[in-house]
Image (tube, rainbow, N blue to C red; front, side, top):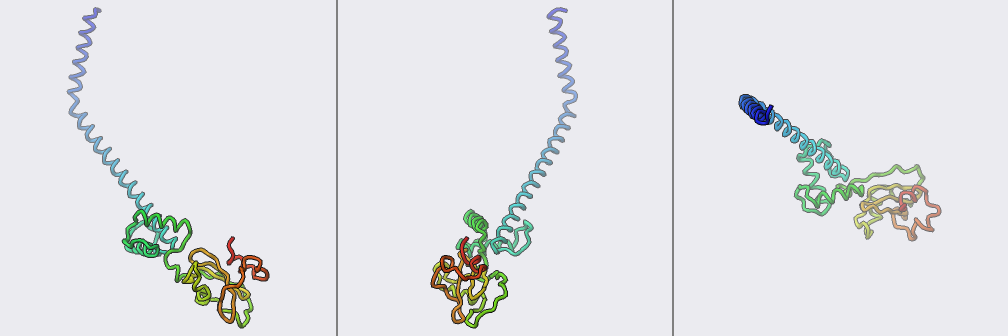
Length: 220
């Protein structure tokens, strides 16, 4: 077969392919459009669901953080409502931030910092966690083992002027524990009141102090 004949056959084949494509173009276009629309709808639905799940996870994390610092008492459900908004406002007030109820950059940074430090921000002045003290026979001059009496003994402390006690224990005429700033303390009972010892009880003057007092009142 000559080159010209081969070219003729090729041209005829090309015409046939073009005509065949034109004949089925209508059905192919319809099928393609339907498939594209279905794929787009499926992709949009998947993306929307993923975004919704991510938002719920984020909101749950914020609720958990607010609960960890004592500002949120509701359910950790990822549903941001009045209780969550009120917790954000309470945290902002306690942290000295603008109380607008919005989780802005400053609020989020302060919240992350408080959680990392395991700090109780809300209600720290009223919530007291008292450790059970061992059974001890107290002398008449011993002071009451109560948060109120211990706060009175800590009043005027430069580290914590208000005496915001977060935990305490009493034993053998001594009281020990922690304040809201995280600092520890040891007080001694005198004339029915708690007072600061004249010498550092965590140093050379620790002899004779109950072990539980040294454990709770001296920094590690």
